[in-house]
Image (cartoon, rainbow, N blue to C red; front, side):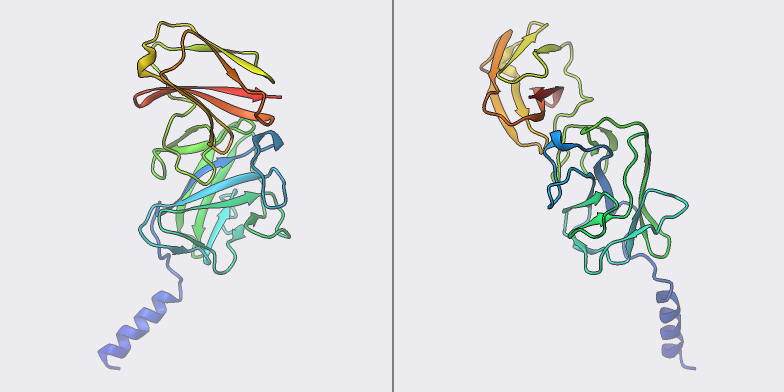
Length: 256
């Protein structure tokens, strides 16, 4: 046997094992909600408020996920196979609904996420782990997300569904600043009282919905006692965000 044929046999032998074409954290579980309900305003294509998992592609190339699996069980890592031809674009996002309903169109895994905590893993068909994590008790409609986006540790976060996670989050603190929001839940007017003296020319106040879309912004134009008219907003959960430079503090708000 000549050397070319020998090398060809080695290549075919190695290829038969289906070695992963991507490496650890080329694609990551970037954000997820283990307890989603209708007040989040995040629904699948059939209008159902399912748990969801967001993947992010950290690479500069589109990746075919045909030979990859998602699972919530380390004893069964090849639990749900991505449909043939599923791709995630360069530095792109991909949403998988964790609802045990493979009969629906789109990406619907054959498992649900446990609010009490469990695991999520992304695995190649040969058993190579691309990403894996374990999480504890979760709060309804509050995502767990990587910060910085795609690379950081997980933390409770306001929703950035199918978007970059970088920005103000629920665990950031603004040094020496706190505020009261009332009533909460509210339906007409939201009152904000700041408990500290602030240089209001250096801070921004905004509010986002569960999709991370800004529904209110007041830059440098508020004071110790501030009111926001919310009568035109739909019911659901919102996030009031006070920012100063790269620091922030976040308060959940329910609109009824």
